Image 1: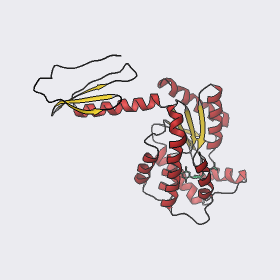
Image 2: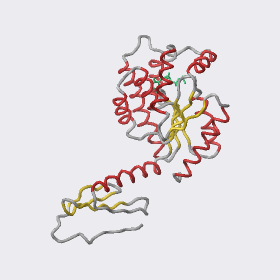
Image 3: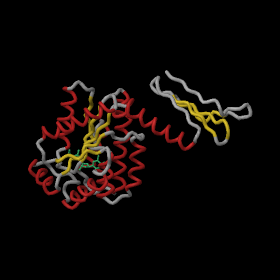
Image 4: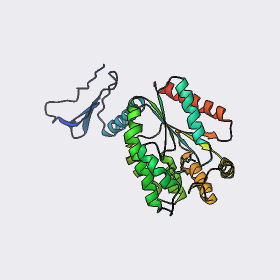
Length: 277
Ligand code: TYD
């Protein structure tokens, strides 16, 4: 453990006030414009600063670092219906399992018993739900899923792979149904307790090809799959709202399944190495 104090500016006249006292940070204000912060991280990281802006930035960065290193690895797999998410999720889970990584495979909606009860209500709507109600149901599933399954698994250092997560709401209910995307992001963040995916695999596919795949599967079409125009809109939504983000790796959904799983697994290995997981 290293400790480092800057004392040169302290004078007897300064009024010392404890500003924050969390598990990892102690922050003292010695004068109206001067703030000294001590941080302790994994027994070997410590910093101080006396500029409030710099201080806030450092606290934020350090908290982000702690979030990444102490909290497992959260992966979501996203894409339109028929893009092959479930196969990739399963194959990637197998590879991680064979490599000896502690891993959990889950999905939205339906990652918990409560979610399993919601799933048919959402996928096969007898009368179309009001878009806001539809989103809030997905958000309720998400809040419960995070609280009950995802966050506890991450805090044990596990890898969690979820077949769909918050970005599906952004695209389907935001872009697809026309709800306010910033409201969706706010509610999503609250439901997820601000724990966002570290890696998002986005399976990109032409909507027409995806519809052909769904029809070939011979399954009963869900409320979301029935409308071709809606499927096309969700494909646009993924391109605009998800694909450009830095944590997103876009994969060609028409690639061979084994090759897709290899690409995703390589990315997971690189992430683990970079973050000492
Ligand atoms: P999915 O599990 O991908 O369907 P499948 O049974 O084919 O694997 O998802 C079910 C549907 O729910 C899908 O059409 C997308 C939709 N959905 C939303 O509209 N919003 C959401 O937030 C989520 C998670 C899913």
